[in-house]
Length: 78
Figure 1 (cartoon, rainbow, N blue to C red):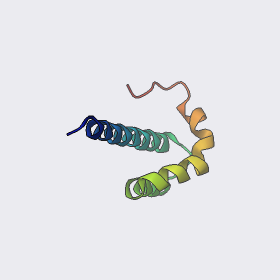
Figure 2 (figure 1 turned 135 degrees about the vertical axis):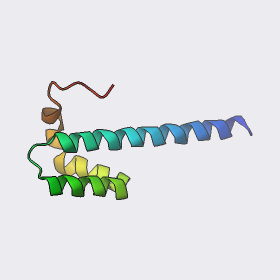
Figure 3 (figure 1 turned 45 degrees about the vertical axis):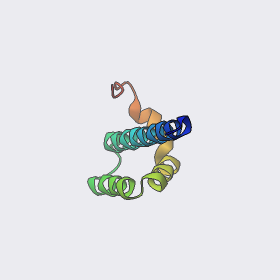
Figure 4 (figure 1 turned 120 degrees about the vertical axis):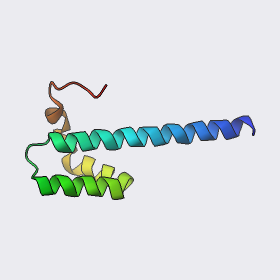
């Protein structure tokens, strides 16, 4: 394998891990939201699992404005 094959593999692994982190962060935000009912939370989570890329973009457009207020003083996932 050439060096560019390794660079390509590392790049896609990085992109995959970043997408996984975004999905987990959005799912945590869904469950922090007290205005959503249980069924709405289930639909959002199912939408994120089935269509991760499109679901993330739609969630950030539709409900992204309140993400900072829902985060509040709660500790980050560390």
